[in-house]
Length: 390
Image (cartoon, rainbow, N blue to C red; front, side):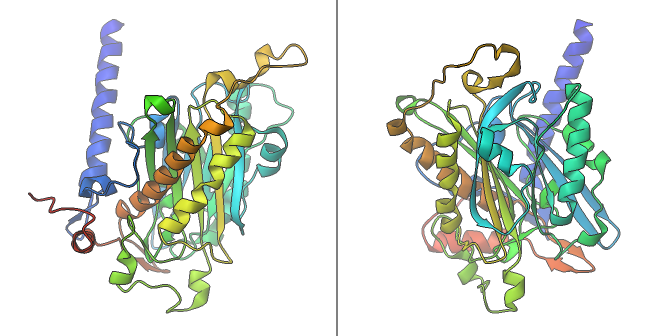
C-alpha cells in the first residue's frame, strides 16, 4: 500500500513539473509563450510566491475544461476552489467589487448580504452562465449532502468574437471535468478553460495568475489573483505602451468591437479578513486595471471577487452554537501592504494572461497572440528589461 502511494505521489510530482514546462515552453508561430517574469519584467515591490499563482495561497485549487471543436467552438470553463474541504459547511468570508456592471455574476446579492462563499467559483462565457450555475448546484448536492438552498458563484465574459456563443456548448460534464482537473501548484494559463475564446487589449486574452508574499514585518500574508481577460484598451506592460508601439490602439476600428468584453478577477488571501476589508482589497484591482491600459468600456463587466482562506475567519456550520462568535482580523491601519499586493498581483496576472495566450482562429475570426520577440525589443527600448540572452 505504501509503495502504491509512493508511486502515485511520484506521478503527481512529474505531472506538475510537466505542466509547468508546458506553460513555459508552449510555442506559437515559432515563439515561446512566456510569463512576464520569464522576460525579466518585475512588476511592483513585493516578491511572488513559489508558483506566482493564486495557488500559492494554501488550499486553493484551479481546474479547467477547454472546448475546441470544429470551426466554431472555442470556449471553456475554469473553476477555483477556495479550500479543499466542504465549502458548504466551512464557508469562507468574501466580497465583490464591481468596476463596471455590464455582466452576469451569479450569486452576488447573497455575498453582499451575508459576506460568504459556499461553492467553488466558476468562470465561463456569457450565455453559459446559468447552465454552469445549474451544474454547480448539481455538484454541491452530490458533494455536500442534503441542501435546501445553495448560492452558486459563476462569472463570465463574452467570447462571441471567436466562439459560437449561442450554441451554449458548455454542459454539466464540462464543469465536472474542470472540478476533477483542479489542483494546486502551477496552473495552465492563456487560451485555456474560460479564457479559450477571450481577447484583451488588442491581442489574444485568456487566463492569467500571479501572487505576492508580504514581508514578515507586514504580516507575511499571501495574496493570489486569477483573471479571465477579455476587454479593450491600450496594452501597457510595466508602464511601457506596448500596444501603441505595435499600432494596436483602441477606437481606430468599429467601436462596437471595443465596447464588448469583460474581466473577471478572483482574489485569494490567507490574511484573516472580514467581508468589509475583503471588499476594500477588491476595490484596489481597479488601479491595476488602469495600469495595464484598460478603461472599463460601456459594455464591459468588470468584477472582482475576494475571499479569505484563513481558518479562523471561516463560518463553520458545525460549531455555530450560541448567538455570537469572535472575529480576529487584520487591523485597518495594517491593510495598506495588502492593497499594494493585490494591485501588483492583478496587474501581473493580466499581463500573464496575454503573454501565455496562443493565437485562436474560428469561422468568426482570428485573434493573434502577442508577439513575444517584438515585445522584448520594445521593453528593452524603454529600459524595463535587459538583454535576457546575456
